[in-house]
Image 1 (tube, rainbow, N blue to C red):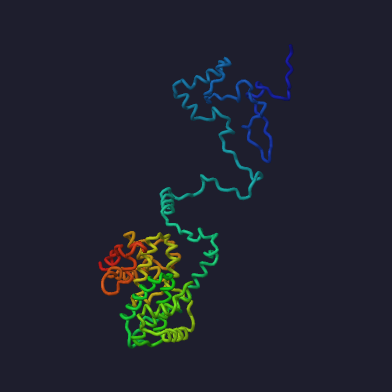
Image 2: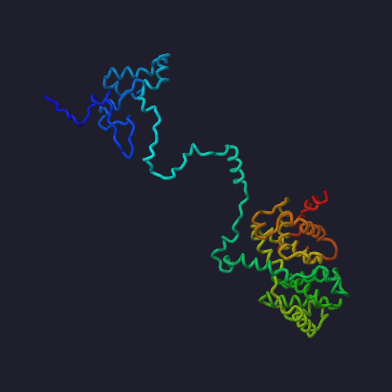
Length: 415
């Protein structure tokens, strides 16, 4: 039986020992490439004398020549064998070992990216330092993301609103020396007694927080422009609360209620007359940003809970009583109250990047005002003016006044 052999298709016997003609694909390919038909269907690719066939498939076929190659794994490494491994020219064709020269005519990319192994990298230590800084870097929290679907939160305009508040807050401030320049019959102590009493009245009437802060603002702005005798000071306070209620409250106390709480010290006509005088003096300008406007925003930035809310309200109401605190801007006073509250509750200084971003004040800027607030907290339960302390010593306000003051802030300044 004759076996026909296709001369065009090379057999295993034709391939071994012959040089395969090279083909071109854009550039000339080196001579170490083999045609698909050159693969031995029984033994696989061409075997070189120094290559170890770990699978030893030829042993199953009874090929003695390949069996000797496989047995090289079990032979001890002799000097001759080591020299043969070192001299790769004896094992592999010379064109395989020689690095392939790149051809300028075969280019796929104009600007081929540099291999990763060739890129200049910083030492591993620097990478670790950068990674550790990124891990411990405090993130800035988006405090409005939870209110995106709440139309009352006006998330789209809230930053513009508070930028406007900060711009307009100076128009609602008064000179810190108005008691000396404008008033002759009243002093700072009388003002403190009036506001401490109004805080109790505000609490008895269960009014909104905004009403109290606007009441104090109207009193200071009026006293900074109008000279008032001592016996009319309480009337100024009552009328200021009446106007604040008309501006903020849904249910407004009637004039008879004001006459009753003043123990009938003033008549109805006197109250109405003072109301006209105050509105004309203030030019009917009732819309001013108070510390409470900023306090609500800053508490949100601090991600506060009920304890921090009550503590901040307690401290900022202590500031309303003190005349020397009117020199601070409402936004600054609110930020200092939140910062001091955090120090009192947590026992250490805490002012996050989120708070600093939204308040525009750093921790260093707030320290002086914060130390003053701690001093008011320390003496809140002593003396005659204890209205704020008694108010915040109840369960309704979470016994916020019972919290220990952050004395370590004052102690650091004294050291």
